[in-house]
Length: 376
Image 1: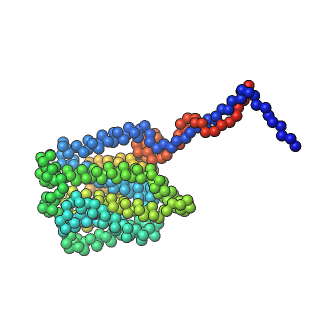
Image 2 (image 1 turned 180 degrees about the vertical axis):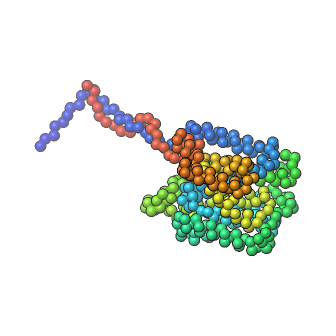
């Protein structure tokens, strides 16, 4: 058997083959424009106390802390699959930790806020392994029971007011870091200057939580968390440590939720077990904000908290009727817009101010190999 050789012409030219190059993109032109607008809005909010009334400042403290709580519940339930109705446990514990460290130990309120978060994280680290034995609705009920048990425990401390609660005295707050500076800068009384400081703390907390969660869900850990939520067995088969990721997320959310509770009750300067561990104020409203805005979106809780603030400002005077209207609105949106307000709009018009989905884009040809061709 012989092999015949094929002659190649003298003018034979070896041409490289062109194949497309692909790139993974997350950001969009709209998201980059939104980042610039968002930075401008944050700067404007920082300067707002110079012209805003005290009532507006107090309302915005509520908006910022509620936004932080909604974003935290969203990452826990939406991306982590841990639907908790006991987040008021960490809010109340953080608030009581603030009051205990300030009134009993004489620690500056600004320094007591991270300490409150650490105490909430420590509790989460202890009860987490117990609650993680439960799944689905049983986990939700278990978290609620844990919060109620903690409320009863806090009501037993007579040094913290027992079941009736306690207040922070003006002397406890008079040496707060930055208070004298805020008084001199804006020409305010101590109580109003304290509201300005708490306003800045709440704004900082909301911004850090929002952008921190956005960076997290775009990271490899965020992808691993989503995989754990969708199919834990499949995620474990490719090396994802599902239990560790959820446990670390649970502790991180508890830490930040505890700080949010401390900020809320630093502004109120009055606490009681029923208020600090209220499932309506710190879990039902939070779930309402996330559901009507859009679960698993960063923009959804922002839309939801603004809507809640508007409804509370205009309908709060109607008492129980106001709660019925909130419930009816939530049911209506869940039936007609299961993705929420922002989720539906983003799906219909492809709007992404905080894009988290990865897109594969073709960027053009690139030389990656060689092939033979013969010119005639």
